Image (cartoon, rainbow, N blue to C red):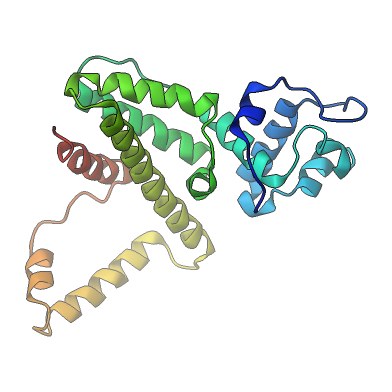
Length: 234
């Protein structure tokens, strides 16, 4: 995808066709169909032809509302981002960031293509701006300047996207595997234990001798998130 995305034209103009006869579907309907396709089959499955087929229209009719796939992706990210359930701002910025990150994780698991789509984003639509405004308000008690609060929001979102991307990839790999997660985990532990016993990896050996951290996905996310947020203290 190499098209130009003009944020003013994309977000500030009315939802009207650019040229020709009015299509049977709105830009929001086209975007919703693209999001549903990505949810079901992944981001790679989203093409103008595939979306048009789901709508039962000719591919060229979509271009009156969406000029290219780059623009469609921007619309998809923003529409999916609008589903984010923003928690209330309490004044406890650490707790508020925890709550925001949990909501982001839930959203990204609902739309598992989002982590891969975020690096391709070139503008920020209204759906994302709502989350940005929320984060800026949540971070106000820190006294950080606005630019630093923007960086914190980007860092938090990047962490959640990276973590969910890993979770999704692991889940998909397990679905393709003929072995269970418990079986694969036990094999990995046996391998690491054997390597640590060689004497070449004393730090690994000491780590394996400690009580293991909870393997529950929720506990892992909370543990890593806590380390990130604790490191953000002004």
